[in-house]
Length: 272
Image (cartoon, rainbow, N blue to C red):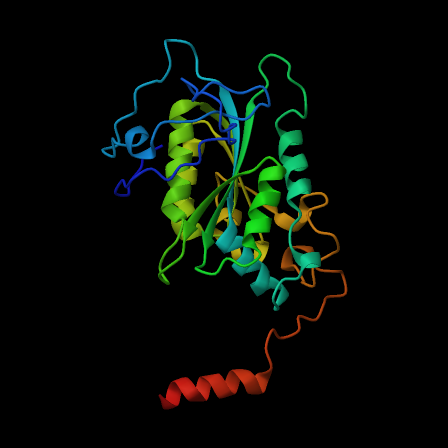
């Protein structure tokens, strides 16, 4: 994978936490639970941004294969609000236990047969100064087997886009990426790097809402799945009308804000 952006200090998740009294592992070999172990500092692993291939890791043995899931929490949360036209409720938020089961099933299920890929799922999140209930959310994710990378959001333009790309590059270096599943509708940041990975032989699947994932739907290289098509991802159907799944007799798409509310905001902008 060619990394085109300027490298910054490591922000890459390093696999599942280990007990406080455990000695630090000496390599990035998989643990007994199938999760990948610690990796190199991101700034070391992607230090060559000239486009030259990075040297192979290890002691001459082949790199282990890996199925990697990347979850862009700010993007998924924002686009969920957009497609349902309201602030998400617990019933309308995705279920990470079902997401994990679907992802592992795509990696061959619970089999530990020789040749089965390792699996790793990572959630990337911006954390506001007052995290509120986010601590419980993060702990729940960790309990489901997800690694969580949390970055403080102190400025409006603080984001985790480069952190996600850095971690993908780290894993493409330390492992042989077999399948990459990216939950994000952010084509501006992901389209080109993900298509480059496909050209390198990686199966890349984008999972997002079809209303906002035109970059993946129109790509000749990327696979696309609507997030609501992941079995069990939502407790109940979302209040949305998908243009790719319209009923034969058509459907009404109600406004996401009142006409007067929009005109008032429009008039205020024009008057200012």
